[in-house]
Image (cartoon, rainbow, N blue to C red):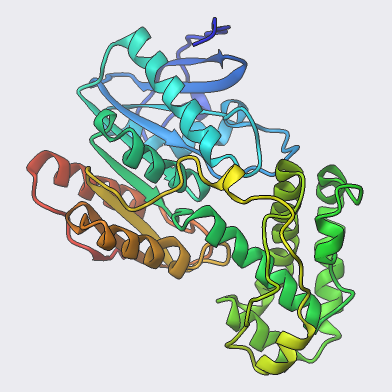
Length: 376
């Protein structure tokens, strides 16, 4: 590892850092190879560690993990159980699954160098961080006792992002002129990600207004095809544009080819296939998608928790695809899926997350597999 710049800050936290009656112990924050991190300790640390992997951050997001005051409060359920919690900012924003794996591992090694090897280490992550969690368990499983991916990006990255591409291709065929075309999105000379981010509220409002002028039956049917509630469609269109522009920037082109794709499941499949935007790939998707992509090859206990409705990562992408991969690997003994009636991406209560985490801990310590199913 390169020489580290360690801007370490050790301090007792009071006031807003009270976590349901427990005062935090020391906080270690700084940078490793230029990448920010934060580690929080309980006042009475029990030599246990949670490595936390954060989710997707749009390019240009000003508040990173290590500076976000809410992050410390959100980790309270782990701190209250005697765990230190460590999180990396990752070297880059956007679709950073591979970078998240590498930087989380760097931080884990730093933790061991500074504080010794914990007797228990779990990896926990939300959304894209749930994908990082699964990648770490699959590729560095010897370092972890178990994983808790929450609403995870668990499908292969190509499959997940191809969904966003297909949504745009078919939407623009049926409702042209409302959002950017795929040609514009993958044109590296068109609007930059910074311009898209700066006009976020205006763009989302414009999409909503224009959709209201369309036939509501057709709009509702389109939303259902992509497992969406109609009111969520404007946000998803805006969010997906950012993701696709992020990919265009990272790849230097378009990794998707839908010239042979036959779309089905719409109100009028013939109309969709005749009108959908069609593009040929200009770059190899393996350039970005291959490193640390998930294959379902588990060897440590994993509890996935998912909401019944998720506008960003539907259960079919967050659970079903990965369950099938695990089954193909013959590793069903290491996977448990729990679900809530949450309505929205990662819309869990702290109590629900605590229940899932405690089930994982009990499984690891007893050797008795956790029960799948509903968490109230």
